[in-house]
Amino acid sequence: MFEAVHSERSSADPAAIWQLWADPARWPDWNEQIERAETDDELRPGAELRIKFRRGGTVRFNVTQLEPERLFTDEARFPGARLAHEHRLAPGRSSTEITHRISLSGPLSGFWALMMGRKRMRESVVRFVERERELTEPKSQRRA
Image (cartoon, rainbow, N blue to C red; front, side, top):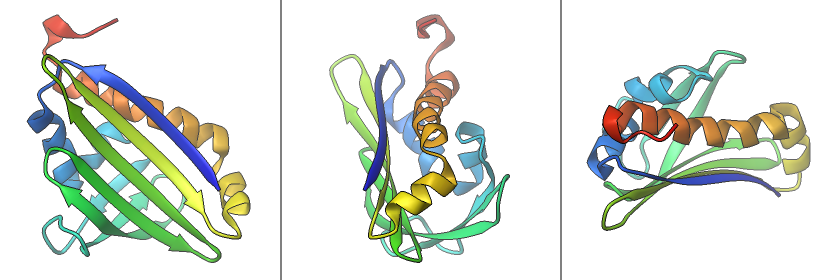
């Protein structure tokens, strides 16, 4: 099993972050690896997503969990492994914790982690949160 996870607090409203996640057409805004993402259906458990990566081909993901303004999880299956991406919001009194978790599980997860790049995945979850903060926090409240 491989896992890359990163969390940060943000002054952004959870609804603003959720808008980035709920619209696959906006995913390239916060995920530089994506060329385009689309679905033929609304974002809901069971919906299929097609994600075209800048490096590589198109991968089909399925939405496995969805709780508006709280949680969104999607996963793809590869031979011998499952790739899951969890997007989580934990609203607090004056801030929201944003978490991204990418995990690979299954008998060939080590192989797929090597192919996808462990370091790259670890760096990606950090960049996702940074970019979402940049897109949603009021400029006056952004941290340096």
